[in-house]
Length: 133
Image 1 (cartoon, helix red, strand yellow):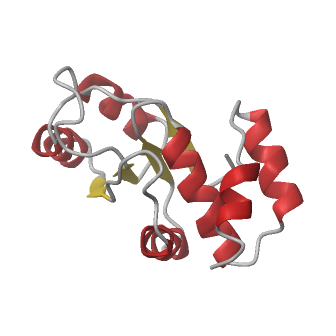
Image 2: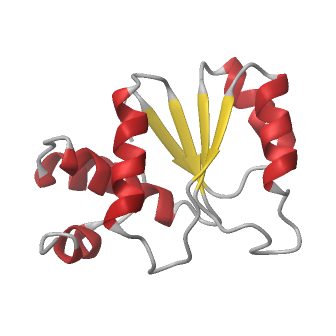
């Protein structure tokens, strides 16, 4: 998404280990626990992250249920300056969260839209929805 944040679809524990090799310091999960039977648990993901020298934080929410509070939490993580990788089932929720959190920090919509599109995501609707908040 930018120099600090990357996003993806669901990760397995082996993928978490590869993130550490890429310089990621903080892994953020935006899917809900037990969203699907084939996904690792938060405990398994946290263990994989810690074993590879990274932090793990869950900011879970269902599709269409992102709140301003979720965005504020992610914005605080951005302020840490740490290299962050966020994920959910498809990457959409994580991208939306990144966009609104960046907007809270003063990023311009045009830049956010371009970055999201370059990564294969469309965020216009979420920016409109959070414009009123």
